[in-house]
Amino acid sequence: MIRRALISVSDRRGLDKLVEVLASLGVEVVASSGTAAWLRRAGYRRVMEVSEYTGFPEAPGGLLKTLHPKIHGGILLNPENPEHRSYMERWGIEPIDLVVVNLYPFEEYAARGGWREAAVGIDIGGPALIRAAAKASLLHGRVAVVVDPSQYEEVVEGLKRHNGNLPEGLRWRLAVEAFRRTSDYDEAIYRHLMGGG
Image (tube, rainbow, N blue to C red; front, top):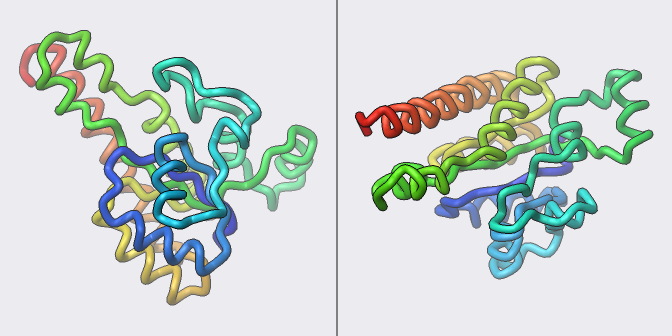
């Protein structure tokens, strides 16, 4: 059952449909500041900013948002494992069952000119979240990771059909797609910096 979702997206197309279903299921949402503001404007009230959840403010320029043990521990640790559960209880880490992340549009930043402009568009926290969620999905079958708005419809249907949960096969496919997305993202950065972008 999905009880808590982490959402941090730059492309918000279709997010309202996903959030509507999450709201109907009573899912608590932890979101980066920009995404949280967008969600509140869209009428979603059960949203907590990452900085509020972690007790640690975002760094200037948004350089540090989601890179925190309460976030990554909530994704990677398995509360069904007694050792993990004990650690989570000790450090106040809550399970995160759904991670919805899309990455900074690197290609848009790269098109602005020099390598410094391109470097601004290199997402660090997003790929870390995606990889953590995909790994947890494969390890425990507990976390689902969504990396593209084109996946929202299938996720929404899965949540409706399975009473707020997602079937293992869908979680697996989403995890595989997540690794493809981070691989493509890193490849685009590499190509640009080597002069082929």
